[in-house]
Image (cartoon, rainbow, N blue to C red):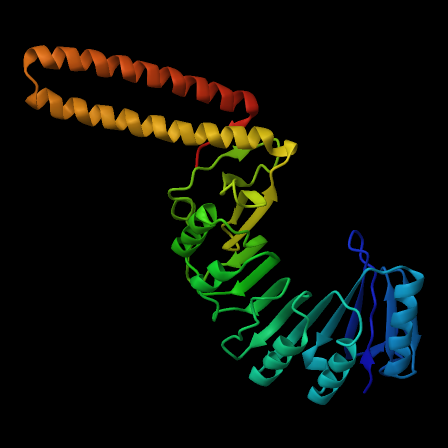
Amino acid sequence: MAPEIKIIRVAYEDAFYLTLRHRWYLTYDNIFVSSRYLLKFNHSCDFETMNGFKSCLQFWDHATYIFKVKKVIVVVHNNQLFPEQIRKYLAISLLKEYYQISIRMGVVDSEYFDYLMENVNLDKKLLIAAHITTTGHPNALKFRSFEYLEARWVTLDDLKSIQNKDFVTLVNTIFTCEDINDFILFWIKSENDLMEGLNITLADGVVLDTDIILKGIPIIKSEKLIPSAFFFLGNENQKKFSIGTLVLDHECRTVSFEVFERQEYFNEVVSSLKLKEKKIDLEKRKTEINRIEEEGLKNWNLYIRDQKIKETRLEKEAIEAELDTIRNEFFRLGISDNQ
């Protein structure tokens, strides 16, 4: 049977999808139509042909030239192609100019996985929405962007080793809330850009706990920008992307981490985060003063105690005045610093 070839132009992406799979269907009159090639443009204009795969590749060349397509995405449906077809069509497609390789459905065994790791260009995007039976490969985390449905073989150390990538998506994983917290704290201190975006589904049985994920991370929320996101700052002296955001989906148990460059658009957020850091320092100092007072009441003599209490009271009043100023500024900016 011949594979279906589908090329779709995508809004905002300026891309075409080239889908390889068997195609047959029943018409509205219940007439059986045999397997053939389908070329589809933007969900509105279809072309079908019984000619060979070669003619579809020629059409690929013509379409990318005529419509000035910048991105071609090759999609392989494993469960609708024989293994020898998959290797044949991929071998031809990988010689052409493409933007992304997407492997869907079925199983990707170690041989198939190694073939992809060693033949797909590392500067391209790779998506494997199929069951991977192997435990990784040295190139698995080196693609420009990658998405793996089966990613239980990816460790926390693996995540920390990623540098200068676009977007990473890992669905079936072993990650816990503590792991996410560890990774975010690592990103904050790191001098390197790791990735522009990271989407992770937590391990089976793990309940998404906001407090654990955000522990020790100075965060704010901005109703003006992304109401559902927590904002925090990274190492702004070294990183190109130093503004981090987290969106937590409790129902799906997913964590979406995305980073942005310092731009005027984020000035209020950056200022607010610096205020948040100052607020944390002031609150720590306030707690420390209370502890000093408690210990001093037990050990200071009457003269020293009165003098120290006066000093600490004045300092606490000054701290509280600064905290009030920070709270008012948060209110003015429409910022919430509550976790």
